Length: 467
Image 1: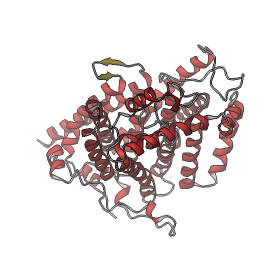
Image 2: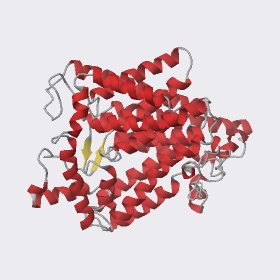
Image 3: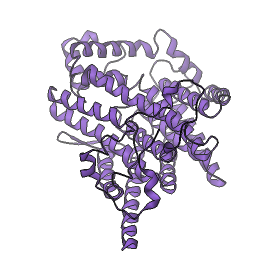
Image 4: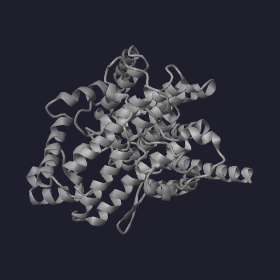
């Protein structure tokens, strides 16, 4: 009987892992979108629900005692609750409901990834799937650069720039945001694998960095630099000098790279367009400070605002109906309470980097892997200041996959006491009082996950975290 239960658990685990692998493969490779009525059909809207449905039997077998904690569970629940209230007052309630479902699916995805990938073999397989998909997009980018379809006409490009690569994303910004996270996962493999696999991982990282540079996306460049510098502080602050020098050398080699970077400080640089867009978002927040315009409703609200007063749209931003700042955009959609809850959520995800780092054994493979994950988490969060990273479904999907991988990597270490940091920023490594199990340990969690099977002592350490 026990063997039969173990077999069923193994099958459920394999199905969940395969679904997650399929998700991280198709999201970056398969572009395009179809619209069926109000429902958009693309790689995310199809593969993400399938992955969650496929993972549910495995989560059910784990039960509430063995589902790993997500240290950002409480702010995620608060944000979703506020978004529900905001949706009641939204003009487009159906659109708000679909956007709410998307965010809820992101958080559930992080939980599913953390549960499946606590097992090191599963974590390794999923990471290699991300690296493989990244290699495919790098190949697409190489073809686009060597055979450009049209000249680059945007400000800040020298005549040496042949093209901006976009992969299958249709936009260089979206591709760069995806690479910010994908490169972190690829680097984690390069730091922890051995032999030929390590060299393969480094080749993928090198190709990804070249493609990343060829997107000519300044905000993502600077965001990755921030993430790498913070991760260097986790490992060895002296590495930051080497990484900064390597980045400068890469931009010097890439045609027009330095000119593109320095154009951000010019009078007609990216700030000249983004500042008015941020001002428009602040105006919308001022008009709807409590409930916002409804989650996912920024485009519709701004379109109506521009139609009524076309002069408010800055020159050079024609057709740009976003805030170019994820945090301002969420605040405009869900009001000041929702925006603050979202900032709390992202801050908690960033804080979890410090919480786990203080409990992992310094110099271990898990510690090196966590440093790479930290770079991706912080870079994506920083990138959200200058672009709509959390509103772009393909990049956002991989971000929440990375959040789940980080939780899985630190799940066992989270039960260990923290290493004192000499009093420097103690709030960064101190675990939250809730331990992220409010929902899991509630009657709702008991109903959703059930008690789980009782024959798996190897899964016992997965439960909870402690101070």
